[in-house]
Image (cartoon, rainbow, N blue to C red; front, side):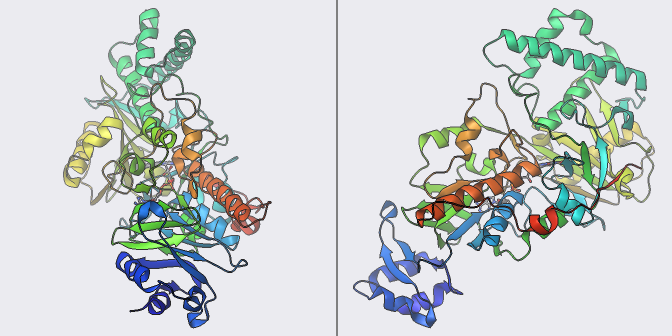
Length: 538
Ligand SMILES: Cc1cc2nc3c(=O)[nH]c(=O)nc-3n(C[C@H](O)[C@H](O)[C@H](O)COP(=O)(O)OP(=O)(O)OC[C@H]3O[C@@H](n4cnc5c(N)ncnc54)[C@H](O)[C@@H]3O)c2cc1C
């Protein structure tokens, strides 16, 4: 095969992104020597100027220049909401974009399973700031999706209104509502006292250590017996919010998150329609696991698992921070020290769900059924999907170390464990007819559920995480602005931000000094809609 054949087979539909195998590049290197580059590219009417370039760490990379008026080309890595938002923006701004996704589906940590015959979100399921500030709320309204309002704005402490929770101890006795409320008030006082501890200690410490300092100072806040177990349950809920245990949640930042106002809404029909609407018409290549990113001066080459290479002007990386922490993608040249350190300095939490579908409902009509216990590790809770969706489904949720421990079990054992917990509350509970178990911590496409702060983390970690390096731009929930890590809206906004930065960079390289703010085109048609939200609370 000569160089002409290679180009004619590998140029995709007039697109500058080429999909070539390593061996093809080798042949190209031999065959292109002395060849008239312009000739080679006039094949099949493509008007490209081609040269072969030995730049990136002495490996062969194809360097393809276009006519000046052709649009810049982009590769987005990861088809979660962040990558899709980035690709949507740039596609709508007439850039040539492909998205490379390792899984056989889009959505990433948004995953709506339909095997129960109804939507069940095994990843994200709440829209935060549902009635007000969430940037996705207009799209959700326009799609006619219903939100089930589960609580007000005070998320980190109580993300469900307490009136809608029912707690039991491990012997199956219901915790009286007044104890739940009283301990809730004490918990708020303890947390308020931890702020004083923070002010006194220049060094950061885990929130659990600060709580124990407060309890030593204020023995009257200590809880005994059942009240102690209820306190542990509140700590368990806080651990669920941060997806990490209280002995690693930092005192310095636990309450610094910017929580969108407007309360929390469960996506009754699941998150999937949102992802599908944003992904419509995008060129997304599933089962394309990226293993290497080589950044040259003018072009970036991205290598996927089977050895094929894709080349573009710039790349937006939106893979989960767990993937970067585990070095599953090689960067050539290596990422600068400040970036590599930022990746090390941030944590990755874990949360898992065990969804159980029953023939019929045998539990009370509340939103959350909780089990209190002597330690937060042994506490647990079920989300009652029946209340929000009408389907007889309970979802057991586990976070932090316990979420990892659950992943060591088979799915059947995990479902049995959840049933044992349920039987403590309802000894006559029937067997589930179906179950689903998530494995976010060991899934090689996520390696955790979402980013979390670590004790003593430097202040500028997020800034460094989101900073571009050469032609590489970074999106994904972990890099989101204004402390929106760990959320769908944070991931979405980070994708839009990475697209804007990337657009500016590419247009400036082409000599255009100004770039317009990018918003997904759906914004004009859908995002500005005045359709009222469909919010229910049965
Ligand atoms: C159990 C759980 C519950 C949650 N609950 C909520 C909630 O209620 N509300 C909320 O707002 N947020 C919630 N979140 C967080 C939210 O889901 C995430 O913040 C958000 O979906 C992350 O989007 P992303 O695009 O940044 O990453 P992802 O969705 O993870 O997308 C990254 C993509 O990159 C792909 N990828 C990985 N490696 C490679 C590779 N080498 N090559 C190519 N592709 C690769 C992945 O397959 C994935 O599709 C939850 C998350 C979990 C796991």
